[in-house]
Structures are given as structure tokens and as C-alpha cells.
Image 1 (cartoon, rainbow, N blue to C red):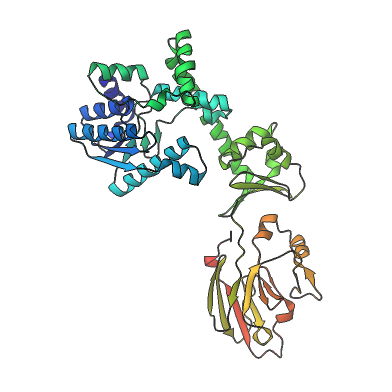
Image 2 (cartoon, rainbow, N blue to C red):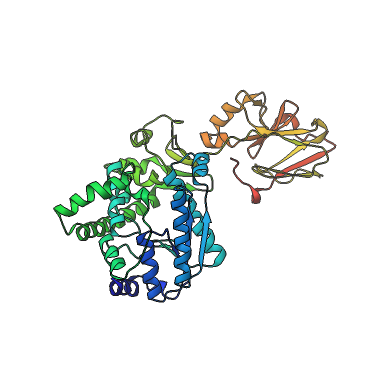
Length: 444
């Protein structure tokens, strides 16, 4: 196995040879063998061990074992203890997911702080098959069937081509000791059920299972590349506009497709959506219809689908005194200055008769029932009607803030001022209010 591993590194992962590497080591056979092999090949390695404190003395025994191994091999070692159960409870996720999140975050921090180029994990061919079967049984798209990536950012899995049997044989032939994790024998986890009950039967049926499985993965990955290229071409036509707050898709481009559902899946899967029939129905839904994931929402707005991230509602009210010259808000910076005349005419600047204002002014989100007198028009108008006339989308309306003098709206900010505070020939004191468009940020 040592020769095969060396050949694999030289042929496919040669960049590891000259770089500073951190090995994620649990004390189990896979990560211990990876450590020994890398050490024998004289790669520049250090060790990182997570003690999740989930198995009492057994967890502490794993930590002691790793420390002894590091001393025997004269390797630098880092150990971190986690209160995994509390973290899982606080983040409302399973122990397994919590442990995964904790260790990967720590590995990333170590790499950044101590300038490690890559983190090596000991995933192997059997792990890859288990992951494939887990995704298959739970239901997944093509992406879930393409296996564990050998390189994913700073994380590299150099043992992926090797079976658990090959790893075990290497350990026994070289008298390598390791720690057994008692939780690996528990069949309450799906991965362990597959490992102990399902995969042995599949291997008995077909001794070449892992090799055939690798061929299947290669074919699926090649197909996945074709799909990605097709989606990229489609998105170039379908995305009409994209900024920090939303992405606007042309519904017409989806409707040109013979079967738009798989395209909808590929475009929106990474945003956590699962209600694919509801998303398909959006194409013919009324304006304003929405579909939500836990973090994003998709809105039908006339001829478009609008994708935006879900933020907590902003209910802050900002008070502005007569002495304020600059006020920072959630949507940009407002500047207040005296002026001699009206110069610029744009949505981000207004000129008002200061004598008509009642300080302190207030800034708040618009509310249903708000009315104002649009500049240049006679009479009042509901903001909801104004938004409809201006063809503002649901997202656009949610981002609207108003500046008020007492109960009266002075400015629908970045849209239109109120006629009641306009400059006239009798105005003696002109106040210029400007929203700094350079620093403008769409509020949450």
C-alpha cells in the first residue's frame, strides 16, 4: 500500500509534497495509518485531535494515545476539547452534525492561524460508498451521488482510492496500534447499519464492488460536469439582474424549456428549498406568491422570480435632532446641510423648507395605512397605492423607509419627497437632505 500511496500522491496530489500539512487524527485505524504513511514519505505533517468528550474515559484515552503517537514520531500535535452536547443543544442539531461542525471550524482556524496549507482527512473508498448509499436512501439529486470530493478547498482526502481492507492489512503488517471507537459498533446510526449489515452483503455478491463503484462515480462526475455546463449556459440567459440583496430570474426562460422542473432544482437546490412542485407552480402563480426555505425565499413578481435571503425584521426607529449633520442608518448615511438653492434633482437628494419641520425627525419602516402627498401632485396617496403604481416588487416594498416630521411623512427615502414640505418662493431656510448612494446598502 505504501508504494501505491506514493504513486497516487506523485500522480494526482503532488502539491502536497512541498506544502505544510495538518492531519486530522482521531486515534482510529484510518487516521493513524494515514499518519504513519505520510511520516514514512517524509511529508511535512502535524497532527490535530478533537476530544468531543462524548465517551468519557474512552475519549480521554484517545487523546492520550494521539499525544503518545506524536511523541513517538516526533510530530507537532494540537488538541482541542469540545463540549459537544451543549453545542448540539444550543444549535439545535444532532450530535454527529455538531461534532462535524466543531472539528471543521477548528481545523480551518488552525490552518489560518498557523499557516497550514492543507488539512488531510482519512476518508477512504468504503466511506465513499457509505456516503453514496446514505444519500441514495434519503433521496438526492445527482450531486449527492458523485461521492466525497478528494479535494475540497483546504481539505484533501488522499486515502479515497484505498479500501478499509487495504488499510487494515497495512496496519497489521507494520504492527501499527490504533484505538477502536466503541460508537462505531452501534447500529443506531445509519452509517453503521450500512457498514455492518448492508455493504458486507454487497461485497459478497460482487467482490469487485469498490472498483465498480469507483467506475460509476467517475461516470456520474462526468455527467455532473455536463449538467453544470448546461446550467451555466441557462443562467447566462435567465438572470436579468443580480445584486447583494436579490437575484432576478426571467420566468420566460424557464417556460421555454421542455421540462423546467430539473432546471429549477439545479438552480435553487443550494438555497435549501425542498418544495419543488410549489416552485414549479410559481411560474404560473399570481404576483406576490412566495416559497420559503429556512434561509431564503423565492417570490413571483410579474415576469420574474426574485431570490433573496431571509433576514430578521428591522423595527428600529431613528431619531434625528436639529443639530445632526450626519446620521448612519441601516440603509446608508444621511447628510443634512443648509443650501442656498435647489440644484440636483435625483431620488437620493431632497430639498425641504426647514421651517416646516418639527424636530426631532424620525426614520422608520413604512407601515400599511401610511399616506403622503407626493411632490408635484395634489391630494394624498396611500403608500401601498404609490408602490403599486411604481411597480415595486414585494422585496422593494419591504426595503422602504420613511422620514417623518411628527406624524407626517417628509420623504419616502430614495423614492419621493412629500409636497407639504417643498421649497417655495417664500422659503427662507432650505435644508438639503442627501442619502449617500456610494455607501447605500439595502437594509435587512
